[in-house]
Image 1: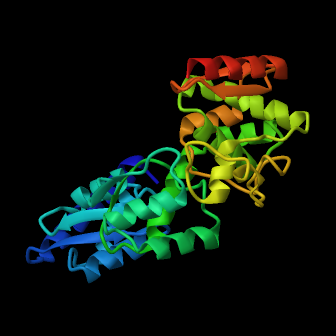
Image 2: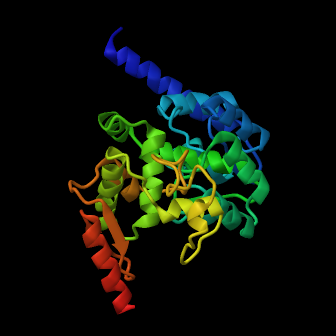
Image 3: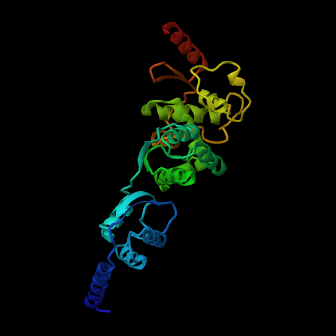
Length: 313
């Protein structure tokens, strides 16, 4: 077909869409709508009609496909009204101009902490959210970021929003690095969660990762206090000898290898540290009390560092 004829037909179709759309007059209506993860363009179009924001879902779909945005509509909460054109609506839906209560999920929060935060803000029921996390095994996959959440959104939809953010961050390149390390994604995420809790400063995280990987290679216990605290279900300033004997697969003072799963939801710096650990032979580290650590290769040096820190305290 001649390119000019094709362009002419497309232009006519485009003009017809706007012409027919202008005939479908809709009185002013404003709605807060929720696009849930997994919804396709057709489902969204019919939902917009049900909410009385558009008259014809078919015209909306036609325009969406013409603009090549059918696969780019993003989940979230949106403030839409009938004064908006199809283009205005699609701009919001495709660029994620969401509406809702802004919530910052800090790096290193556990699912219990996230549930408590969302509950305090009256966004989800705490127990329902935790039930979703337990049933789907989402600890570690609730990516720490800023979210806009509409009160009343289902707990499952909120959790899925965080998982989708995680999936967008843990891209193909990072997945390929998992294979290079001969580890699966969950194992890397478990390591990243331990690094997240043990290292406060980003520059130290690769070195902390190196220590833990070195211990795994030599079949040493990881001996991470953070995993014991997860097993206890609470954070303590100092762990007692009794705490270190807690019977749990998450207690890395008793059980070799990685724990069964992540102990928190790590940020990108910790994930990258788990994927790209530092190159060192260190086997020990100890907190100096200022947010940094002292690293040692040999146990005798580690003990010396302990004694020096005790003298300073």
